[in-house]
Length: 162
Image 1 (tube, rainbow, N blue to C red):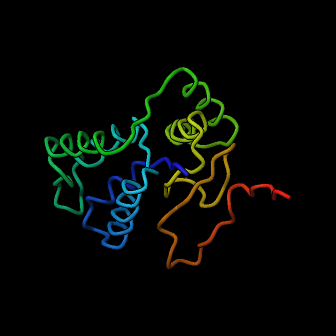
Image 2 (spheres, rainbow, N blue to C red):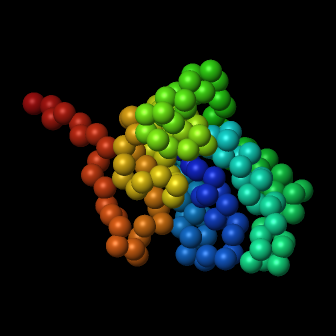
């Protein structure tokens, strides 16, 4: 099943401040490359550059990456993964998602990519883990080791053939 990857996964893979999240993000993206299941929305690539090159207080005002390096990383991501681009349907669906589910405008866009392009899952820590929004289920890969849900039921159960 193809999975839409949120910006936070892309950022954690380069962020040394939380080694556990970094390793989970690296493993998830590596697996997504190997089985061709990871898909990036255009929005996540844009947000990655902004987040990676923004000064971080706890890094002495330095960014995770200088802007030039963040742009190189974005280009690399765009070459390695399938990138989905918005259209009028994504925009309209995002408006619906924002109004219906009460999620932020940016999260509604992320969900709209998955909904419009028929992707069954979003991998993100920004939504409620395990919740279904329309036809899309959210998976937070960082819940392991916490007291949150760790295993989810299958998204769909195939009918039994007789």
